[in-house]
Picture 1 (cartoon, rainbow, N blue to C red):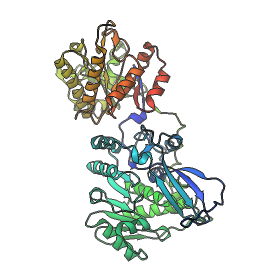
Picture 2: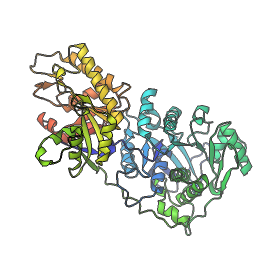
Picture 3: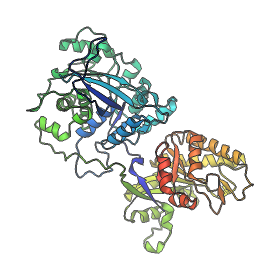
Length: 587
């Protein structure tokens, strides 16, 4: 069977990962800010509702400031930007998700499963373009996993091998601490935007980051400073704010430019950029976010701090010339033009139409055993599995290979090394997909529902071994086909016991050390010659199982043939599964 695999499910990592907030910015025009107990009429009779939030702004700013190179393959991660955040379950959440997915990778973001409203930014915008805002956290605050291990695992998977991780303080500090800790394990540069709180950054978080980036007001609050009128005031406050840590303080000073204060040595000072001819300052809402997103891009491209600050200053200057946070974020070509640099970057890539998902085609390796007369060459000096991989590589359009476990990990009774399999897959220009568990005949009376506790434990061990193999191969998912977990006659089984046994077993393997960093999915089938009726006979039963197991890395693989055999509509089943819980593959 051929699998159509959504590219968002691949294990590739973005170059820049932004973890933070997504808000619906409700913008009200005012001639001046109201005084205490004063009510003022807006000169405009309507409000503007725009996509905002410091995390979303910085992610899109980084994406637009990145260099789009025309000959870079779509699935290459060169300058790819990923946003990790929590969208509300309300209409704002749906609208913002649709808008943002056209700009950045949202694979690791999610809509609220708790019914939380989306975050809101209530912005009063004065005639001089200077905004004042109140932020209501909503899902940005309420929807992160409460369990620390689950949160760390979610962030570890999201960060991957990113070069730069951008954080803000509009999400709980524990989220930032876990994110920074995971980022440092992979030697990523961590930038913390101080926005969202004027309180001091904790020493625990400071010990995990490389840069902290406040504006003047935020630095004043962090250092409890009376005045930042001069550069010396700013430098002193910056060093007070971070104490005896190794953190660089990147302070944005509005029209005055920016200052980078290192732990030791001379600060770096750049002046504010002159606005493009014929423009004026309209809305400075996203100027700081644009600066930080562009600074991250420049660092990811290998520029020095000074070069990165100059690049970021140009981006920030352009951002104040348009109304609204997201609409004001400039493209790479606009930034290069303001800097007087001949841009070698292509035109910004056109976002894909909503709902259009690029597909990669994959196959399980055993499909290459059929019609061997079509493959005239077979190397008798290598394991037959290697020949099968070579045959798959010759099939036009197939890009990924799925291996059965344990079938494809042995040859002539001898175990095959994961390194040899990985080398063969790469040498034939294929990518590793999932490892698919196929229980041997010894489990014919059931795997996770076997009445013999020893056999049930061996089934769990087999899955954990498959996870270990998947990790060694660089795969990100293990697919379990519960072929033998069923019955032949209607009054043969104790359904409650079988269900409880399956729930406990899937939860045990999904949370095991070997498997907890992988996606674990069940590929259900209503009937099979080995078990006439399955304990998981339908999409509805499969969804109940996912909810009962309750692990964020546990989901489903939908087999279209299996769904048709169950009398189901595959499109409707996929729609039910994909939204709240996540379908990993469609076969």
